[in-house]
Image (cartoon, rainbow, N blue to C red):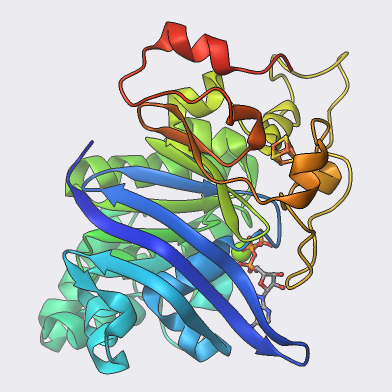
Length: 343
Ligand SMILES: Nc1ncnc2c1ncn2[C@@H]1O[C@H](COP(=O)(O)OP(=O)(O)OP(=O)(O)O)[C@@H](O)[C@H]1O
Ligand code: SF4
Ligand SMILES: [Mg+2]
């Protein structure tokens, strides 16, 4: 595995509500190596955005808090940093792209001014240097005629171009890690593919690590080195992208894959949907959090929360199906066949 840049250990983050403290992430662990793309996938409400806000410590401003665990970035624990120190990290080492490009841009400034502002603030550039670097960044993210576009306002640009500007602002701090929360959801399919291509190209050129949040397994298949599947606040399966797609092990992951049009597990030509809905925050069922929706649930699932079991050398899943079939680190592909349940 690539050298670790970010390591999240047993992170619980949540909110204080009328019903007391509720956990939006529940002891999640996840690592991102240098230059790697890790995709965090899961249905709406599973806790993906809360995870990203916790890493950036923006959760403090969203009425939430980190309750337990560590987030180690380049050897420093972000959970204990003061906001002033976090501002420096957010401006210089970790950047974030939010889902809706229009809301991330200020309508009253030109896009060039907005990129230049970031360069002035975080890289101490003077006005002229910042402007010329802003134009260069617009070029880097594939905006034609960047000198002209730099002088335009967000409403004069298409959604796809605005998302490119948002990416340029994120790159202005020359980040080692980019967190992209559903960066293409608001865009149409052709533009989506272009933005994903751009992220791949930038990653290859700049060597960044990317945490890409998406509810789309197709995007994960295309972009990820590793995939973490999140359900109701927990990472229920995590592993290399090939393992997740060739040997999906948690019934929730299998359900997500069967819901993709054209996936080989698709049943009878009809698009599969996982029955039931994700439980609301703070109302987890007993035992396995997925048991009310799981076609394989047994009594133990209803009573006891499953721990993580190793499915392969670098592939884990939290599911009782693997209890009596431990696979030890170093097991090869053929022995993994034995633990795969017959779906
Ligand atoms: N400020 C908040 N106060 C209380 N609960 C919140 C707050 N923000 C998020 N939540 C809850 O935390 C849970 C996880 O939310 P989160 O936004 O992380 O989901 P998500 O996986 O990003 O979903 P989506 O795919 O819709 O973006 C949800 O139940 C949500 O309602
Ligand atoms: S532990 Fe049981 S209920 Fe949970 S996913 Fe596995 S089989 Fe299904
Ligand atoms: Mg979200």
